[in-house]
Structure formats: structure tokens, C-alpha cells
Amino acid sequence: MDGQVLTAPPRGSDHVGGDSRGLNLFRADPGFRDLLALYLTREERAHFWPHLDRLGALAGGDLDRWAALADKHPPVLHHRDRFGRDVQWIEHHPAYREMERIGFFELGLHAAPHRPILGWPTGVSPPVKFALHYLFSQAEFGLMCPLAVTELAAMLVLRYGSAELREKYGRRMISLDPAELLQGAQFMTEKAGGSDVGANELRAVADGAHWRLHGDKWFCSNADCGVAVLLARIEGDPPGTAGLTAFVVPRDLDDGTRNAYRIVRLKDKMGSRSLASGEIVYEGALACMLGERRQGLEILLDQVNMSRLSHGMRAAATMRRALHESLAFARSRRLFGRPALDQPLMRRQLLQVLIPAEQALSTASYGGDLLRRAEQGSNSALGLLRIVTPVIKMRSNRDNVAATGKAIEIRGGNGVIEDWVNARLLRDSFIPVFWEGTSVINAIDVVRRAIAKAHADGALRAELHRLLGEADGLPTSYRERLQSLVDRTIDFARHVAADPAREKHARLATSALYNVLSAVLLAWEGCRIAAAGGDARRLVMSRFVVEHRLDPPHPLAMPVNDDWQDGAEILLLADGPIALDRASALVSDGRGA
Image 1 (cartoon, helix red, strand yellow):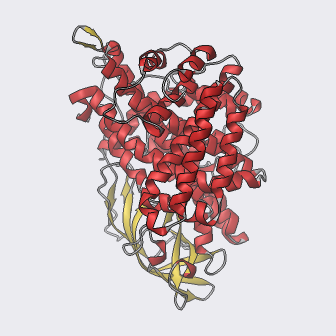
Image 2 (cartoon, helix red, strand yellow; image 1 turned 45 degrees about the horizontal axis):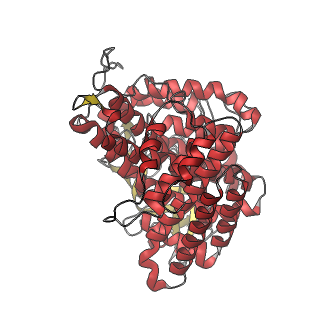
Image 3 (cartoon, one colour; image 1 turned 90 degrees about the vertical axis):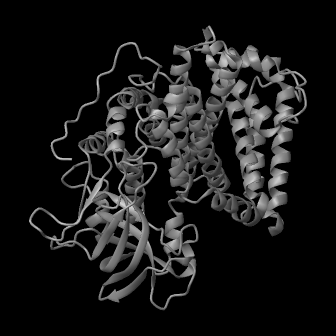
């Protein structure tokens, strides 16, 4: 790849076929800005608004072009250097390095919670961090993994490491200096233990004050990182998760030589192709214990809420970019002699991208607010996170696959051509479905642990009723309908959790919880935003969730009254705001209202 020039092909001014390249993705998303007004403090909004605006322009411009190049030129593993020495190194395309420069050193996304970035005097709050993730991810999904795992690995080292480990590695993992930064990672997956972490077989053998690792890790993203956090079993410790210990493994030793492990190969992935994910064999690699012996699972779970919610926000970002593409296409096309947006089936397809995108944005934004409150000492927020995070992770990432696929159908044949971003969005959408637990693992987490063990369903019921009570201007009939759906949904989830034989319905219960959570949040947000003089469209979106995902009519029954939907679709796809009285009339009309 030497000598390649970092350029993009010229673009015509007429945007034949319509796409979102060149769009400022912050300015083009008024719903996102409305939510920032709800979840950011006044000081945060004043400070970060210009940074978000700049990032929105980058995401629709240079970042997008670099992402396309890095996707077409994935990393290459070299096993020897030019002098013939057995020194492994991974070559990245210059476009990837440009994205690293923006993500790590200009924005400092890897260090955002841990130190001042972008002129803010402290580490940023979860809502601010997720807002930055949301815009960056609309251009590039692959690099968000190194940015996120460096942040989380640094958190674990700074929280559980000795003073020596914090100084030696933790400080450098949050550096903004390219000469000092150590990128991080978490290598957990093994052949024997993917979702079942307790089956992991990597062995740790004592070597004085340190440890030596022997065995394999099967799926290691950011494979050439400077520091990895992983789990291994010390010889003699019990099987299962109770016997796992966390370790810090540097790439380079104090004398400058490489640690004793090999990257066997890089994965040829269908998505996140810019990201170097590999298989690693440990051949006596030097490691330092992190935390206490057999504390590994506790340390691993300490970062799960943050990671799962980050995946929810990134799913929202991918779906939002797919929506931008679909709207640009639809607004540029005529079908059968009429504008595409005048076609009822085209509008229906666009709503099938818009609604799940907004559900994911609302739930992830709410999750970020819960994280902020939990960090400030709220036990109720901490309890809600126990059930909300696996619910969001499970459903939003599955919706992402369907929505990006729908956006390809909207574009038509060009959607599967790699000249357009749609194919990359779809390929990328499959990858996070498996990270931080598959849909099965997250659904089991909801019913077995969050409900059956922690009884978090009671806290969720109370929270959703509280939000409905605070939604000033919400029509009484629709409030009562949502209250009934909250109770029916949580009763069903509790019913599934009460009997192991019903666990086959865990994903259905988790999906229902996600949909009722998002329906309530959208209604609450719409009323709150409208009360401040803004757009009530999220209240209308709430009814789409109810009618199509929570309480749909029988598929063969003629709709009692869906005239409301035709008008609602036109309003939601238009640029102008929707007044609260109009939104209230739309949610009060028809079946179940």
C-alpha cells in the first residue's frame, strides 16, 4: 500500500441518485439536537455545540471519505520487518491513520471520561461522550472499537490497577500525545468460550512478581494495541467464571522487545473491515495481575453497562446515516411520474428506517443520562441500568440490521453497489450484534438476572409510570393506553422470568420491554420538547411504535382507522416542526386511543 495518495474521487454537483455525502450530520438532525437540550446541562450545550457542529461536518465530509477508503483497503499483517527480523506489525491505510488523528488526538474520544478534552475542564459526562460517538459513528464504525475499548481498558487499569500499573500504563492510555499514547483492548473471546466466558482456557503461571500466559485468544479487536486487558485462569483455580482472574498484558516489554505472543492471522470480516481483529497465541507472555485473584468476572462486568449503551448509540448512528441516505434518494427521485415522497409505500419504507433509528437514539440517550445519575450516586439509576442496558443492546442492534437492509431496498440496485455507503452500513450492522453478548445472552441476562434475581422490573415499571406522569400535555386517552401497555409488558416479562421452561420467550419479552420503554420515552420527550416551544414529532413517533411493534392489529384484519397514519407519515418526513396540539390529535385518534 506504499505510495497510495489520500484522495477521493471527484463528485459532481448534481448528486445523481441522491446521497448524504457533504451533509453536516449535526445540522441535518434536529431531533438529535432536541434531545441534547433535554439531556445536556446548559453549560455543556454552550461549550460543546460548536464542537458537535464541526464533527457533524467532518462526519459528512472527510471522515466519510476516509472511512470508505479504509474499508476498501483493510489492514495487513506483516510477520517480518524489512531487515528480516521476526517482528510482527500491522499496516493500516493512510486514511485509517487520518481517522485515528481525529478520533484519538483532536477529539480525544478514548480519554473523554478520564481527563479534560476539547477545552472542557474535566472528563466529560456520558451524555456528552455518547453525543460525540453518535456523530463519529455515522461516518466510521470500525475505528469506534479502538476508541471505545481503549477508554474502557483504561478505566479498568485506573480503577483496579496498582499505583505502578496506573502510572506505567493507565496514564499513557488516556494520553493525547501520539508519541505517548498506548491504545488498549479487551481480549476475552476464546474458541471454547465465546458467550460462555467461564469456559475460557487461557492459563496463567506464576513467574516471580508477574505471570506468564499460555494459550489462545480467538477474536481480538485492535490486535496491535499497546496494552490488553484479558481474563485467564491461574493453575489450580476452580473452573467456570469463579476461577477467572484479570491481567494486563503489554505489547512491548521494558527493554523494548516484544512480549511473547503472536498474532496468527487477521480476521477477514464482512464488516468493520478497517479494524484489525486477529487471533493471538500466548507463548509465555509476561502479564501483570489486575485487581485481586479470581476477581476477573467482576472486573469484566464493571465496564458492561458503558459498553452496551455505547453499542446502542452506535446502532442509532448507523440507522440515522441509513435514513439520511434514504431521504436524500427519495427526495431526488420521481417514480411513475410523481415525486417518490408522494408514494405511500415509499413513505412507509422510510418510516421503517426512521422509527427504529429514533427508538435507539431515545433509549441510548436515556441510558446515558442514567449513567450520569449513577455516577453521581443515584442507587435508583444504578438499579435501572441493570435492566435497561441489556434491553437496549439486544433490540437496537437487531433493529440496525433490518433498518440498514431496508435502506438498501429503498435505494434499489445501487444499494448493493459498493460505490454507495449503504452496503458498508449493512455489513457493519451485523458486527455489534455479537459484541458484549449476542441477542440470546442479553435476553437471558434480562430474564434470569435483571428480573428473576435483581427484581429490576419493579423499578422499571415505577420509572415508566413516573415519566408518563411528567409528560404534560399528553392526551389522557393515550397516557392510559401507554400505562396499560407498560403493565402488560412487564407482567409478561415477569411471567417469562418466573419459569425456566418459558425462557424460549426471553427475546420476545426483551423486545417488548425495549418497545414499551421507547414508546414512553418518545412520548415524554415529545411533550417536554414541545413545552419548551419545540417540536412534538417524537410524540407522533411514539404511536408508530405502539401500533406497529407493541399493539398491532391482526395482520389479516382491515384496519379500523389508519387515516391518522397517512397524515402522520407526511408530517414526520417533512422538514418543519409538528405542533403539540397536532401531535396530540394524531395519538388520540383511532384504535385503542
